[in-house]
Amino acid sequence: MRILAIGECMAEMAPTDAPSTYQMGFAGDTFNTAWYLAQLTPETPLSYFTAVGDDAISSRMLGAMRESGINTQQVRIVPNRSVGLYLITLNNGERSFTYWRGQSAARLLAQDKQALAHAMMQSDLIYFSGITLAILNPEGRAALLDVARSARRGGKRIAFDPNLRPHLWDSSSEMTENIMQAAAVSDIALPSFEDEATWFSDKNPAATLQRYARAGAETIVVKNGAETVLYRTRGAEGSVHVPPLASVVDTTAAGDSFNAGILAGLATDTPLPDSIALACKLAGHVVQGKGALVPINQSLLDSCP
Ligand code: ADP
Image 1 (cartoon, helix red, strand yellow):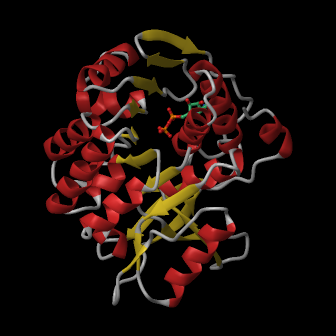
Image 2: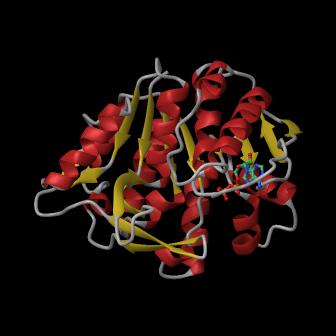
């Protein structure tokens, strides 16, 4: 199975122990998922679809992707644009994020509909998120959903994490409408209950699950922080216990790494409850480290399907 992740990767400036000194890295929700996925199933062909600029930082980003085992052949190069950037500020141990991404090349990733369709043709499982949609203009969103709908009709599987980020949208109604349009073209929905409850008024994780089932997703996995994960696949429902953790250092990329566990399971035909158990183990490891990309140890990789 060939996997394609679609979205925005940004340059990250993270504070180091030395005063006023930052370390540069690369991260972004769908990219984080691809980064973990490349390690979980290195034998699965994995591509990232985005747009970057034609400058030095864009080339470095593509180099970092390739070094992580992610194919970048489908990435669009947009002249006179660059990649988005965010800076992390630490205040008494709490991380806050400042973004410069309004003019990023990735906002134009759906401008060339044919390139998008071509990338999807080359894959079997296509993954994108609510953030992927949020950064596009209405024409770009329509193009992405249109191409995904056709790909699905042609037998491709579409996986979607709503990843609700209200500040990236003009209004909450624009966000919820677009999210449910994306859900309607998806086979696999990977929502997080807390955000869904806030923006869709779901009373409990079962209500979240039912809403995505009604939208047409065949497989739904509802994440809920330290609480039990609820799932439904081909009509069968169940839940998976989340192993408790002694400490949580930083929840950045908890959901992104979790999704990598689920996609790795799909790529290897693993039963969904086993994939969820792996996803919880990986996400549990990630929240005990700092930053979005936490190195994975061998014992975790050995437990992969
Ligand atoms: P998101 O990052 O999308 O909001 P969640 O917060 O629901 O997602 O977390 C995703 C997964 O990360 C959970 O299903 C769980 O496996 C793991 N996780 C997150 N927080 C904790 C925690 N406090 N203890 C144990 N596991 C956690």
